[in-house]
Image (cartoon, rainbow, N blue to C red; front, side, top):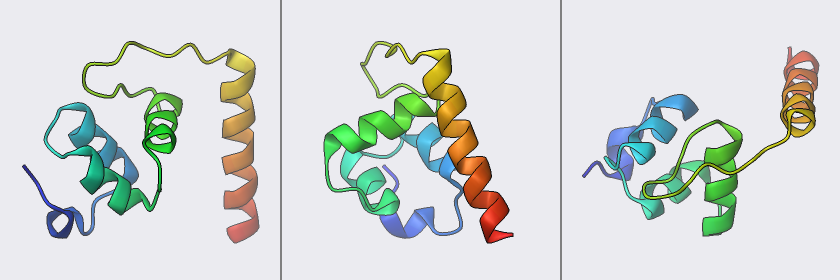
Length: 80
């Protein structure tokens, strides 16, 4: 398994893919993402259309997806 040091320079997509494929563990992903709870990790995975190993897809309404996209677009616009 990959450890936290080996994730330096990885993007969010890279880390979520590695977790989905079981190449990194939950604790490593949580440390990289700086989240404190397993529930937060699951929510991040599902919001990004990724599945935790062994999980079933979580239903996310189109409205919720649109809201998340608009929030991130607003943040990117403010930062740039």
